[in-house]
Image: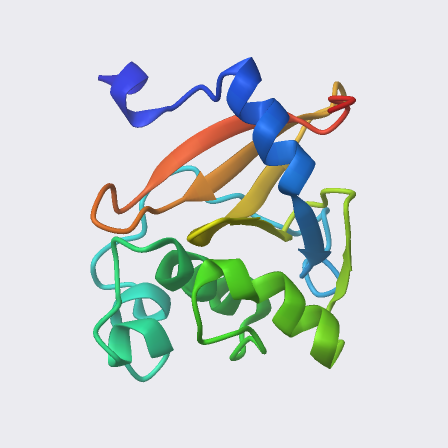
Amino acid sequence: MKHLALKRVSAVAVTVVLLLTTVFSLSVFANAATFTPRLSAPASTNKYYYNSDYNVFQKYGYGLPNCTAYAYGRAYEILGKEPKLSWNGAGQWYDYNRSNGYYKYGSTPKVGAIACWCYSGGGHVAVVEKIDSNGNMTLSNSEWGGRTFYLTYANKNDSN
């Protein structure tokens, strides 16, 4: 059962994803010493994910399962206030932030940051929950039309 809940990203997928990954940091607000990683699905009563007054994606009919609804809710949960994130598809999140300068961004993952992938026809966003001393990252995710919550793993030191 545990194996089904956790997804291991293959080396090929990591290579492709990390080539396209950039991370902008919400960790300006999420101190690593006080940050609590989300390693299990949020309860259906969690206002940041399921309440349309807090989650714009839920409000407009694109709630969970959806990577943007999840990442938006998680950012709200981390910050404790409404995040200044794109209300559009995941493929637009990085450029939206870069254009507006709301949060620090770059290619170095940080706890509490949102990882953004952009590819032909779409994109994906996930939240960096943990980084261990070896550079192994745990990311929390949701996927449109699929799983409401799952974890993936990658290594920040991958040269690709």
